[in-house]
Length: 384
Image 1 (cartoon, rainbow, N blue to C red):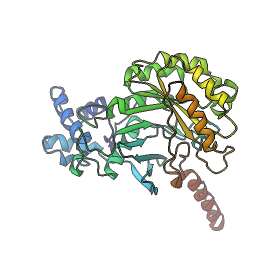
Image 2: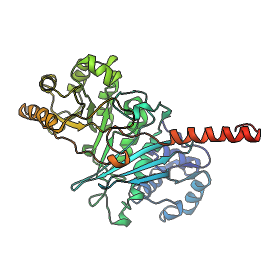
Image 3: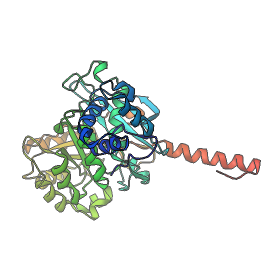
Image 4: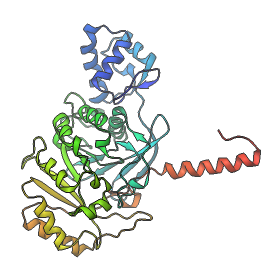
């Protein structure tokens, strides 16, 4: 869980219990904690203020006490890229110097923010660029929520910029589909999702928040019960032998066990369907037989199937299925009664599309280290 104690810790992204602890440390009496927390919560997440002094209805002594030990610092933007299709990708630097990527995808009827849950990833899915980057650590709940706050800053998406918590927002949807496996960081992810969906603050509807997992079976029910968000399953194959290759986690939680867990997901109904993500790989999983088996496997599960044209990345061993093959696959699934939209790739030109996220800082840091070693040899000095 989050640790927001200590000098200089940012409260931007903090949960209510973390704010309560901060207020106690600032000398606020227990009788006043709830009132002061509600005030600060609103300033942080409904108005997006970045300084304690901007909280004009909070007593000056309380503001001063908080400022002595805490900040409202945002995640640092190490890089920002802009796609020709309007997609934006930010590389956010964390307090310890590690970096994660966050992507904003604007559409006519929504604006979706794709948020990361880990620095790197431990799953090593063979078709995913992020999977080639080793896991460094889990993100804290504050760092997860902080991506949404920083993105709203960058998009001028607070009420002062013309947005409100009831409409006209640029970010209307959240997908936990960035770097990492959310259910290998379940405590922090649930805490962050509950901050994002709190109606007195960031106020994202739980039905507009989707958590995508590769199938960490033991925690699927928990995220439904404790966060109440929509569920997406990164499926990609209909046979265990192939899914073992594409999604190695399948060796631990095979398809039948995963789908049985999906059938028991809290709140599952035709109005709250599970999304099954299926990346279309040429000659690998794109046959008519695969489509028919997918329909058979999902029988009885209120579902929709997102068909994702494979997004290439340097060194990938796969190619995208041909367009007519994708359409034939979709036709079989549609005729069986499942919505199966073919996702339009977004942000490919800035490596922001599905499966392409990977912190370029990994390569940059390694290159910088090599350069420092060369310089050190020249100067006969030790490396820091």
